Amino acid sequence: MSTTVTGLLDGKSTLVIGASQGIGAAAARHFASQGARLVIGARNVAAIEALRDELRGQGHEVDSIRIDVTDRATIDAAVQQARSLYGRLDAAFNNAGASAVEPFHEYTEKTYDHLLDVNLKGVFLAMQAEIKAMLADGGGAIVNTSSVGGLIGNYGLAPYIAAKHGVIGLTKAAAFEYGQQNLRINAVAPGSTATEMFLGGMEHAPAEIVAKFNSFSPMNRLGQPLEIATAAAWLLSDQASFVTGATLPVDGGFLLA
Image (cartoon, rainbow, N blue to C red):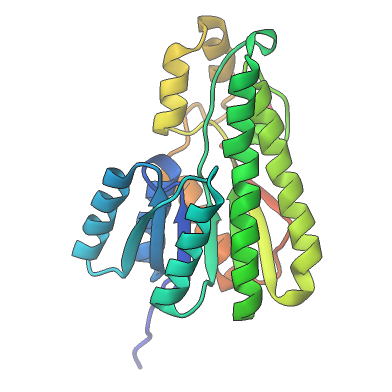
């Protein structure tokens, strides 16, 4: 007797926001390998088109679209593209983000507003569009990227930490509100992860802040983007059918410090 092995996300119409690099790009590749039918989006059109072509070349169903999470219209267009292509929206991974590293008292109001717009308001706008579609389609699953910074304080990241705490709040609020309507909404909380955003930020951070970050790693290494993506895939899959409103740390023990 033969056994058919299927992927965690087989046939699921899945939107990945923030797919141009790092965790989002790793998620697009991993979700495709798990059978998802994808729409991927980010501001960097060249990067997402290259990733789209890469995945199509491997035989996966994937399309791309420009998404700026500070522009509601681009999010709405991406959701509608997934529904037009695949008939519904089953799953969404909201991963777009921005960061900066400064002492608390030196942040400008402009930087604060930008970080809150991208990391928090952008998640709110994406969830609104996704939830509307999923309610019409009979249910679905959403995963938001928060951070260990959404669970604790840390050095040099005050606006980012405020936004990531807010992402967890939005996740809990929506999970509670829509739990009886076949929607599951969860978050992942990555620790220090070898993404372009994290490594670039550390290049320009004060040396004392870098030293403090490096001291918070019981596993003595950075996480890899794929390690976050695999956790998100599980939360989006039917294997996590009784999990909602949760924030899953994927941090190598960072929170133990």
